[in-house]
Length: 279
Picture 1 (tube, rainbow, N blue to C red):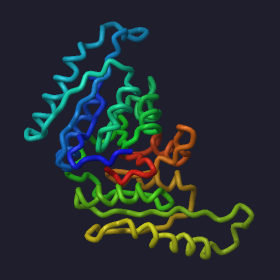
Picture 2 (picture 1 turned 120 degrees about the horizontal axis):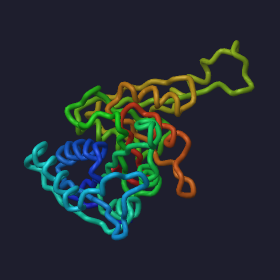
Picture 3 (picture 1 turned 90 degrees about the vertical axis):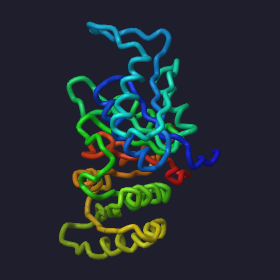
Picture 4 (picture 1 turned 45 degrees about the vertical axis):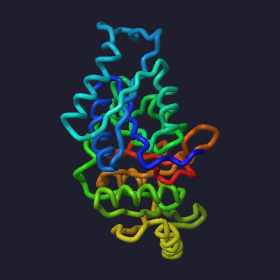
């Protein structure tokens, strides 16, 4: 894969919905923080038609992009904005756009009746297949990347080094601490009365290897927690501005920890492909 240039744009998917406009806000903050252009991508297949039960037709594609662009100009007046109207289905359009993006941001409405709980197929598909880091914001997430709301970035030890490097870079940009968490569990064969100290100590011993990917100048907090990694990281998301995970892909599907976090995280989730350096 070609290395990204220093000014590769940050891409955000836009469909005119409130969740996608919140994603535009977050993406505008992040693009300004990175010093890169923001590219608004709206997928509008030529044969698109209103879904079942729709009472009004969707707005013209040009209007969707124009509304989003005006929103960005108001929020970040000096930010360079590019608009792209893609004659494809959203998943295909965004995966293609990710090939020349420093970061891809998507919002999601979830499924009918459970907004913010279950992710839509586009958000999951992009996170599982995009060639650049992807940030997913569900409907209940804050619509700003800066200033920090909770004041920390969280990454789990055991994730690929690319995820740790990405998390460290995000913490440095925002000027907030990086929390490096390591989940651990007793073997199922051990009874509750067996001391857990050896397992916790072994988990703590894995932290220095992860910290080797964090550059000087980033404030680091470390902790080890007993429990399944997916539960530990979801809990940590409640006091984080961003949860960073490796994609953990197998045959085009996300790993269990990443999949669970995307469905249940209380903050935006960044999914970093293996082999990427956070672009």
